Image (cartoon, rainbow, N blue to C red):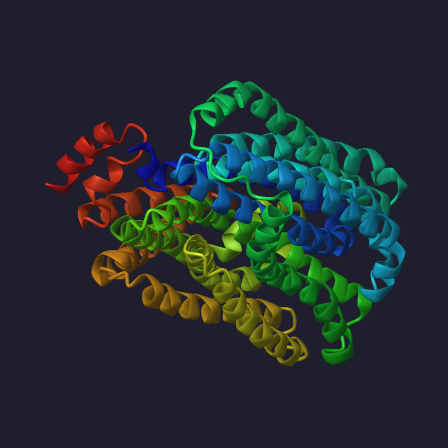
Length: 534
């Protein structure tokens, strides 16, 4: 029975950790933006997309492969082979971490010349050690996720983010008198400290659980031993398409870091310092807000892979259908209100978060509005990708996102070069990429799993509740604005939105009591919900 639990509990753990992480990230990014401004963010963001790209190459695919392969082995009680998969993958991750860290550290100079951002040089070198620590940590995460235990991953992520924020902000402030380049480098070094302490945390968790791990190995089924070379080969077969797919996201950010700056200067005719400020608004201010909702959908996607893989291994298609439908609906229940809420409060949110950079906050609010449209599609893409990976069709989301990325490139080239649109063209391009990928992934999941979605429950009810919520948020902000300032009015409107959405979605039975019972303390919550729905 334990092996047939749905993804909801794991998604809840990952979602809670994600919210904590993003809250700490806001504690980091918002003061950082106020401290070093647009110019400093341009140096910081010049290094960060390159780091994320290399990190994606080293960590995106292999942990997913570990999770999928281990969940399949644990479904048949082959815990010995599951642990051998982990050990082989750990060695592979260590080698990749050493290589990518060296590439960024020693290649910082040429990379800065290519992206025409020499001020990012020190930021690249100080963030490079993180590329060694994080892949090691990711191997442990993949192992625990394959066992459908999300708590170690969540704990290590929180520890990693905590030390990233503490060291990053402290060093940015300490180095600010030495110039914006030095301050940005101090902020970047936080990722390296975070990776180090996060790795230590998950290793300690592994040591604590080592006794029970080896107890399962002794009591489990032992079949013919698979060669280590064969294990690595299978890991690579699964991970390479996943890595390519995840790299497309990083490539899209890299495109923005290189293409947007060029088009703003050569196409739209902006001066270099103005172009840097506009890019800093999009990548440093707006992106940090848009990334917040996706942590919840990422929790769903990560939890779906081992659950669906194990069910697929057992040929339990009814359980696959149940999790596929529930997974997509959960993503929409979360993504739709976030999307409309961001659109309605785009300008107030920017002014709330960046009070010391008011001109930049107002200027970037239009980008936030546009990117808000893409939140629901990004949530859907991430969730559907987890489903396709779970059933072993890892190349399909790669191709679909690749098609979206190509569309983004052409959209960005054309629109950013128009002075009146400028950096907003990159936001339009990103949304277009997510829309295309979401539609194609949805069609693929329906065709391959033969899941029949309840259209009213999956799409109509979340949309209705979200539209009502958006209207309530708009009205609450306007009314509160008559007597309160922007900050308090925005917070009040958000709280009203949460309350209204929760009441409406329960009143129209957009969430079933059966699903609520699957959550921790679900029986008690379900009884309260049943009273509301009567």
